[in-house]
Image (cartoon, rainbow, N blue to C red; front, side, top):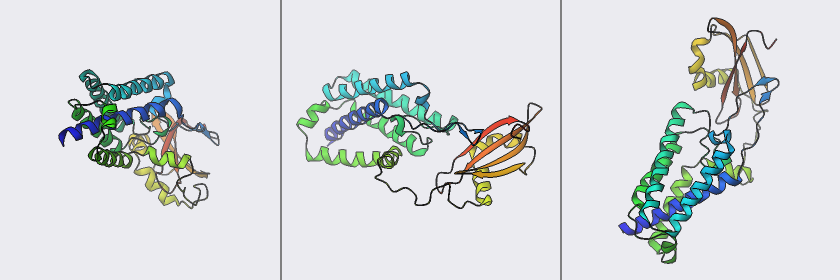
Amino acid sequence: MVAVFQNTQVLLLASVLLIACLAKLTIREPVSPSHVHGVPLPKRTSLLRQSRPVSVGLGLTEGGLGLALLLTSHVSVRLATTVAFAVATWAVGELKVRRPDIGCGCFGGLSTKRVDRRSVVRASLFTVAALASITAPHAGVEVLRNGTTQVGLVLAVELAVFAALSPELSVLLQRHGLRHRPQEPCERRRSTLEETYATLHESRVWAEHEDEVVSATPLDVWREGCWRFLVFPARVDDQAMELVFAVSTAERERDVRMVLVPASALV
């Protein structure tokens, strides 16, 4: 049974690496507007979008490792795979702490949602699977050729866990129209000012800039489409500035963005 589990990890890791390679090479992120009604907004994107060559190179590396897992059982391939997933786990953990506003880019343009606990757990489980696969007796192709019912069952369970921990699956279904979107568009949804304040004050963006705000009462509040904007007076490095917060009016996964502008720049 131990050998069955180890062999299954080889198939699992090869599948994940090949899927990640294909996604990075073929699926691009949708282009989002940089301004909303004249107000510049930071883009919600993934880390790897900032450098397409890096994304392609990483994808090709993952594809090479995936093919190697299928074709050979050499320990060097298994160790390289383990190191790759360990580094990925560290990187995802760092993103969750330092850059929670962007996606990890793990699966190309599908990984635009902010890194959360699920992403860290998923990467950690893949690292554990890589460790378990180091001493697996067979390469992936051999496991497929001599596949047993036990291997199929274990692989099916692990793929189900992988899917449950992957926000990319819902993004993929939405892009292909296989998942129902909210019936009420965010630009039409009724969003109270109290809801907006609650979303703003609970956000990480507000926590990072709260000390710069000099008045709890905003200078201006207005709504445009799926966003409600709040302008607060602020002081940064002894200079009068204005913090413009954009708070999403969506029903779920409401985002908060911020831009710092000179005082009265919006007049």
